Length: 113
Length: 111
Image (cartoon, rainbow over the protein chains, first blue to last red):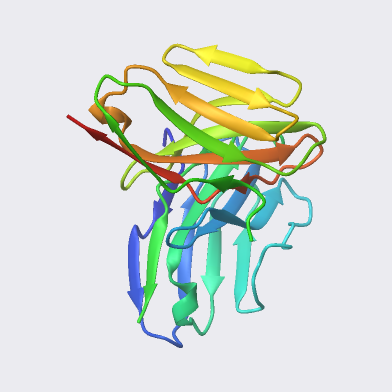
């Protein structure tokens, strides 16, 4: 596609359930980022993938959060045993390299009841 | 707390100029960005400035940087209803790939 796409656009889940969020980066972009945007706050960095290098997971808030990326394609962010404080918009971005302009997807709005 | 700070709301009349302000913390070589977020859409990069510059102009957008006060502003001339959105200020150290964002300023354009 022309831009970064994310699915689902909205996800409502019950506390304690696992969720999986998907990101399709722009074709050819080697770098991929996940950010979290809580209501009324700026984006928080979660994780960064660059090619086949080990990902930078320094922003993941707890071990309930994990992410995978196969090569330079799709990435999935998994949140296990969701809590209400996980409710946020999760944004994915991709770039040609780690220091280039980041192009953002529309986000997945996660609501944990 | 956040390293990048912005005022949360701005209301402006159509046709007037909007000025959105931001303060940042890093004094080393840094890129400073302005992003626009419309409802249901991802962040769109509007413009950016490097920390060794004082000003950058791009059509209706003017970015001013006061390095001494670590203050960044975005001026939108002749504000239109399509400019209603949330505007985020962000910084990135030259040696890093992570962006640090402010909380965003919600700009409402009234007729």
